[in-house]
Length: 342
Image (cartoon, rainbow, N blue to C red):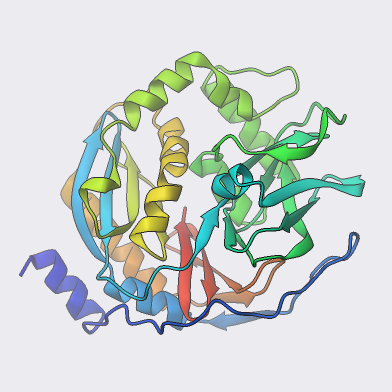
């Protein structure tokens, strides 16, 4: 048996990802424009769902492209995958609309899933349009036929407040890990603006309106992303449900999903965001040290106590800290739909 696999099985008592097969059914809440969900938060407890997921995870092969390195995270086959669309898939199918509120507000938008599948929105995804571009504040799982729901956002275009278009589109863009960490940490808006400004300077992508999307639109950055992400394709690891990413020797983040299929569909935009942090960087990672870091992070996340709360979608968010990093797991019906550690 692989020594790393043996150590993980010993660490978690041989736990396996054994999640019940359940229909995705939960009462639908229709939120009229102007109402805000403020669910109670339960603090100081671990997450059994996160324990089950990470107890089954085994670090797999490693791949490197330039300054960017990935350790794939594999898990045995669990329950049948849920019928979940990504934000981009739902927009392409005309199932999801995201618009300004009737009385436009910087920290809130209205999302409406008019389709028959669940739609997963990820913290850090950029929405283009409205009075200014925004970024999603937290993971949301919108149920079928959700009705209009208020969703929390940050501004990532400080210099504009005019309505070019009332609705929002997605260009498969996610803010880079340093900014996404501030997002999931519920930092003040000023910290998000500072992160956007720093990213624009570092990548030499100024924008007259301070738009983060201008970074992705810069030709040199696009060329870098194409090169940096070329080899890091999870298709070569069919059981991969996630990845731990390093930029040089520095840990950048972990993203894991409910199934290999959902991971493969969400991964390209997350990988491009990680690659932004590798712009101008040089190789220099130590695979042995990186694997040890992943093992410590996983062990810490399993034992972490955090807060549990609902939001405008279905399910609950488990938010925690581990090894100087921030973590957030979206839980639904006994499963972890998405885990991020940044």
